[in-house]
Image (tube, rainbow, N blue to C red; front, side, top):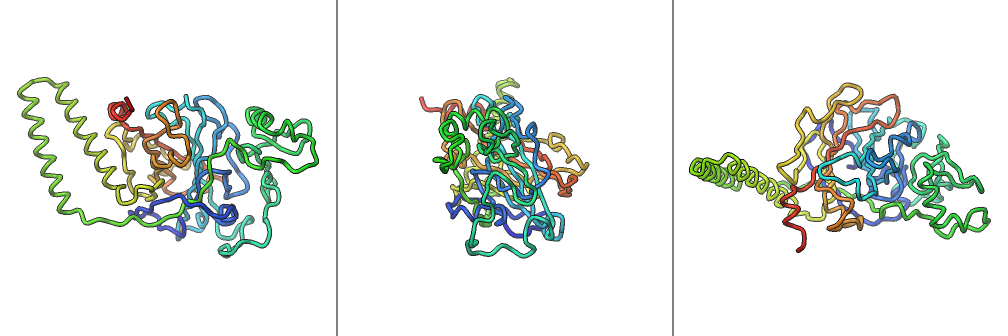
Length: 365
């Protein structure tokens, strides 16, 4: 998620949360990060307000994370970031339904109007490059005070802050702006409570394990289980029982594979492998090739990264009741990484939850 990547790679890169100085998460540092405001890459062609609304409740979505994934050897993707947004309305999170998420891709060439040609310095810049965080430099695009997304709706009294729409204007008014509106004093609160906690996504390659002997053993066990299941099904002559048994076996196998794969690094929150395959959490609701729509340019979409359930703990939203929730989120992006007329390009996300039976088994009594 940092540095150039080949067009396709089977290497899995893991993402972990780390607290850093705020300046390291500014757009000119090309960060991968979770929470806070989006560090918009291109300063023009940002997603529209309808494009950033939840398809379930039509309320503005919150920025969840962004992954910096440049493609080496492709100048138009020298800088390239994928942005993921989610709804904060708990009721919108239904089983295996992705409509409460949106993902967008932005990219610029090395020589562009927004950033220096050479890599950013490792030291803290001498001064704040963006004194007004609610206006993007160069383009002058105004941003919503609450969520950091495009917003041209200004407060009718002071005209000093803008919003993406009425819901966030009302939220800010009730929270602090009612007391601060028109005041010459500096705002008491400078960060919105709507945002998720902000952290950097630091990366390291996943270490490969020697699993030949184990794979042989598992293959043998699977064959024995299949023979046992077939014998039982023949004896009972009940097709529904056979299907239930086979489904349970398959689901257990996938869950155990998931647990085994993440065990060496249990705190991983993102797995990046452009052109690879996701690590699923259930045998149910796995997409076929036909389920992944092509890009608007006509090119096939390929898997790029997935968000792990461990991230929910850091967002302080993980609970057993109605809550923001997922088993894993798999993001698919244009295989050609097209320019999309220099607009932020919508990409595809697939939400997979843990199976209903397994979820019920894990609920506290």
